[in-house]
Length: 203
Image 1 (cartoon, helix red, strand yellow):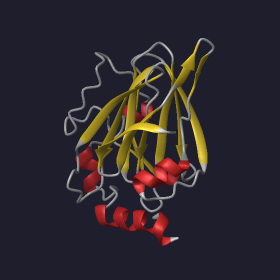
Image 2 (image 1 turned 60 degrees about the horizontal axis):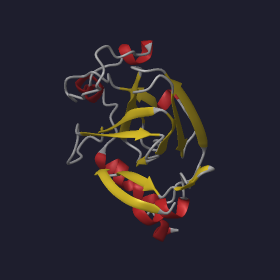
Image 3 (image 1 turned 30 degrees about the horizontal axis):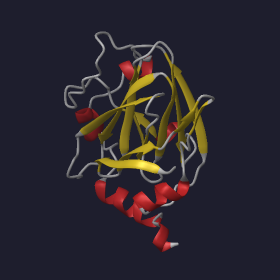
Protein backbone atom coordinates (compact mmCIF):
# COMPACT_ATOMS: atom_id res chain seq x y z
CA UNK A 1 0.00 0.00 0.00
CA UNK A 2 2.42 1.12 1.80
CA UNK A 3 0.20 1.83 4.82
CA UNK A 4 1.32 4.87 6.79
CA UNK A 5 -1.03 3.92 9.60
CA UNK A 6 -2.90 0.80 10.68
CA UNK A 7 -5.35 0.94 13.56
CA UNK A 8 -7.44 -1.83 15.08
CA UNK A 9 -11.04 -0.65 15.42
CA UNK A 10 -12.50 -3.81 16.97
CA UNK A 11 -11.18 -7.37 17.31
CA UNK A 12 -11.14 -8.45 13.65
CA UNK A 13 -11.51 -4.98 12.13
CA UNK A 14 -8.74 -2.59 11.06
CA UNK A 15 -8.44 0.86 9.51
CA UNK A 16 -5.75 1.32 6.82
CA UNK A 17 -4.40 4.69 5.73
CA UNK A 18 -2.50 4.54 2.42
CA UNK A 19 0.44 6.66 1.35
CA UNK A 20 -0.61 9.04 -1.44
CA UNK A 21 1.79 10.26 -4.12
CA UNK A 22 0.62 13.56 -5.56
CA UNK A 23 1.92 16.26 -7.90
CA UNK A 24 0.53 18.81 -10.33
CA UNK A 25 -0.93 16.03 -12.48
CA UNK A 26 -2.98 14.46 -9.69
CA UNK A 27 -2.16 11.56 -7.40
CA UNK A 28 -1.54 7.83 -7.18
CA UNK A 29 -2.09 5.36 -4.38
CA UNK A 30 -2.41 1.64 -3.83
CA UNK A 31 -5.86 1.30 -2.27
CA UNK A 32 -5.53 -2.44 -1.67
CA UNK A 33 -2.53 -4.70 -1.11
CA UNK A 34 -3.03 -8.38 -0.28
CA UNK A 35 0.43 -8.73 1.26
CA UNK A 36 -0.12 -5.80 3.64
CA UNK A 37 -3.49 -7.20 4.71
CA UNK A 38 -1.95 -10.61 5.34
CA UNK A 39 0.85 -9.10 7.40
CA UNK A 40 -1.61 -7.22 9.62
CA UNK A 41 -4.28 -9.89 10.03
CA UNK A 42 -2.25 -13.07 9.66
CA UNK A 43 -4.94 -14.30 7.29
CA UNK A 44 -5.30 -14.79 3.57
CA UNK A 45 -8.10 -12.81 1.91
CA UNK A 46 -9.28 -14.62 -1.21
CA UNK A 47 -11.18 -12.22 -3.45
CA UNK A 48 -14.51 -13.65 -4.66
CA UNK A 49 -16.54 -10.57 -5.62
CA UNK A 50 -16.18 -6.79 -6.00
CA UNK A 51 -19.17 -4.50 -5.32
CA UNK A 52 -19.86 -0.82 -6.03
CA UNK A 53 -22.58 1.10 -4.17
CA UNK A 54 -23.67 4.68 -5.01
CA UNK A 55 -25.72 6.60 -2.43
CA UNK A 56 -27.04 10.13 -1.97
CA UNK A 57 -26.66 12.20 1.19
CA UNK A 58 -28.44 10.80 4.23
CA UNK A 59 -28.81 7.24 2.92
CA UNK A 60 -28.05 4.61 5.56
CA UNK A 61 -27.25 1.08 4.42
CA UNK A 62 -26.94 -1.72 7.00
CA UNK A 63 -26.42 -3.24 9.45
CA UNK A 64 -25.67 -6.28 7.25
CA UNK A 65 -23.87 -9.54 7.97
CA UNK A 66 -23.63 -13.13 6.73
CA UNK A 67 -23.85 -16.43 8.59
CA UNK A 68 -20.54 -17.99 9.64
CA UNK A 69 -19.38 -20.24 8.13
CA UNK A 70 -18.56 -19.04 5.60
CA UNK A 71 -19.52 -15.46 6.40
CA UNK A 72 -18.20 -12.62 4.30
CA UNK A 73 -15.09 -10.58 5.11
CA UNK A 74 -14.94 -7.14 3.48
CA UNK A 75 -12.36 -4.58 2.35
CA UNK A 76 -14.25 -1.26 2.21
CA UNK A 77 -13.09 1.87 0.35
CA UNK A 78 -14.78 5.19 -0.51
CA UNK A 79 -13.92 6.08 -4.11
CA UNK A 80 -16.00 9.29 -4.24
CA UNK A 81 -17.46 11.60 -1.63
CA UNK A 82 -17.59 10.92 2.09
CA UNK A 83 -19.30 8.41 4.36
CA UNK A 84 -19.38 7.35 7.98
CA UNK A 85 -18.51 3.66 8.06
CA UNK A 86 -19.85 1.61 10.96
CA UNK A 87 -18.71 -1.83 12.14
CA UNK A 88 -20.70 -3.67 14.82
CA UNK A 89 -19.59 -6.78 16.70
CA UNK A 90 -22.45 -9.24 16.21
CA UNK A 91 -20.51 -12.32 17.33
CA UNK A 92 -22.46 -13.80 20.25
CA UNK A 93 -20.07 -14.45 23.12
CA UNK A 94 -17.49 -11.91 21.93
CA UNK A 95 -15.90 -9.71 24.61
CA UNK A 96 -17.05 -6.72 22.54
CA UNK A 97 -20.48 -8.04 21.56
CA UNK A 98 -22.84 -5.20 20.60
CA UNK A 99 -20.02 -2.65 20.51
CA UNK A 100 -19.59 -0.54 17.39
CA UNK A 101 -16.77 1.49 15.86
CA UNK A 102 -17.21 4.25 13.31
CA UNK A 103 -14.79 6.06 11.05
CA UNK A 104 -15.05 8.55 8.19
CA UNK A 105 -13.97 7.20 4.81
CA UNK A 106 -13.63 9.77 2.02
CA UNK A 107 -11.84 10.76 -1.18
CA UNK A 108 -9.37 12.94 0.72
CA UNK A 109 -7.62 10.63 3.20
CA UNK A 110 -8.65 7.60 1.09
CA UNK A 111 -8.60 5.22 4.01
CA UNK A 112 -9.98 1.69 3.91
CA UNK A 113 -11.50 -0.68 6.45
CA UNK A 114 -11.16 -4.45 6.65
CA UNK A 115 -13.72 -6.36 8.68
CA UNK A 116 -13.71 -10.07 9.39
CA UNK A 117 -16.59 -12.51 9.04
CA UNK A 118 -19.23 -12.19 11.77
CA UNK A 119 -18.97 -8.42 12.09
CA UNK A 120 -21.90 -6.29 10.97
CA UNK A 121 -21.39 -3.46 8.51
CA UNK A 122 -23.25 -0.29 7.61
CA UNK A 123 -22.62 3.27 6.48
CA UNK A 124 -24.27 6.63 5.95
CA UNK A 125 -23.54 8.81 2.92
CA UNK A 126 -22.30 12.27 3.91
CA UNK A 127 -22.03 13.83 0.43
CA UNK A 128 -24.42 14.36 -2.44
CA UNK A 129 -22.89 11.46 -4.33
CA UNK A 130 -21.02 8.79 -2.39
CA UNK A 131 -19.39 5.81 -4.11
CA UNK A 132 -18.40 2.89 -1.94
CA UNK A 133 -16.47 -0.04 -3.39
CA UNK A 134 -15.81 -3.18 -1.42
CA UNK A 135 -14.09 -6.47 -1.98
CA UNK A 136 -15.47 -9.64 -0.39
CA UNK A 137 -14.12 -13.15 0.04
CA UNK A 138 -17.41 -14.99 -0.57
CA UNK A 139 -20.12 -14.43 -3.20
CA UNK A 140 -23.45 -12.93 -2.21
CA UNK A 141 -25.78 -15.62 -0.87
CA UNK A 142 -29.31 -14.34 -0.10
CA UNK A 143 -30.14 -17.32 2.09
CA UNK A 144 -27.21 -16.58 4.41
CA UNK A 145 -27.46 -12.79 4.46
CA UNK A 146 -29.12 -10.97 7.36
CA UNK A 147 -29.71 -7.46 8.58
CA UNK A 148 -30.18 -5.80 11.97
CA UNK A 149 -32.06 -2.51 12.25
CA UNK A 150 -29.48 0.30 12.01
CA UNK A 151 -31.46 2.55 14.39
CA UNK A 152 -31.72 -0.08 17.13
CA UNK A 153 -31.26 1.67 20.48
CA UNK A 154 -29.19 -1.32 21.62
CA UNK A 155 -26.38 0.00 19.42
CA UNK A 156 -26.90 3.71 20.03
CA UNK A 157 -25.22 4.60 16.76
CA UNK A 158 -25.01 8.30 16.00
CA UNK A 159 -25.49 8.34 12.23
CA UNK A 160 -25.17 12.13 12.13
CA UNK A 161 -28.26 12.72 9.99
CA UNK A 162 -31.69 13.94 11.20
CA UNK A 163 -33.77 11.78 8.85
CA UNK A 164 -31.92 8.64 7.74
CA UNK A 165 -33.08 7.21 4.41
CA UNK A 166 -33.46 3.43 4.65
CA UNK A 167 -34.36 0.72 2.18
CA UNK A 168 -37.57 -1.21 2.81
CA UNK A 169 -35.50 -4.18 3.90
CA UNK A 170 -33.44 -2.22 6.41
CA UNK A 171 -36.46 -0.31 7.74
CA UNK A 172 -38.21 -3.63 8.45
CA UNK A 173 -35.12 -5.31 9.93
CA UNK A 174 -35.38 -6.93 13.36
CA UNK A 175 -33.65 -5.61 16.47
CA UNK A 176 -30.47 -7.11 17.87
CA UNK A 177 -32.46 -8.84 20.62
CA UNK A 178 -34.85 -10.35 18.06
CA UNK A 179 -32.03 -11.65 15.88
CA UNK A 180 -30.30 -13.06 18.95
CA UNK A 181 -33.49 -14.78 20.14
CA UNK A 182 -33.93 -16.34 16.69
CA UNK A 183 -30.45 -17.85 16.91
CA UNK A 184 -29.25 -16.05 13.79
CA UNK A 185 -26.15 -14.36 15.18
CA UNK A 186 -22.66 -15.68 14.42
CA UNK A 187 -20.96 -17.31 17.40
CA UNK A 188 -17.63 -16.00 18.71
CA UNK A 189 -16.09 -19.49 18.92
CA UNK A 190 -17.33 -20.47 15.46
CA UNK A 191 -15.82 -17.28 14.02
CA UNK A 192 -12.49 -17.90 15.74
CA UNK A 193 -12.38 -21.42 14.32
CA UNK A 194 -13.18 -20.09 10.86
CA UNK A 195 -10.44 -17.44 11.09
CA UNK A 196 -7.94 -20.09 12.15
CA UNK A 197 -8.64 -22.02 8.95
CA UNK A 198 -7.50 -19.09 6.81
CA UNK A 199 -4.34 -18.19 8.70
CA UNK A 200 -1.33 -17.83 6.43
CA UNK A 201 0.91 -19.97 8.63
CA UNK A 202 -1.52 -22.88 8.42
CA UNK A 203 -1.21 -23.15 4.64
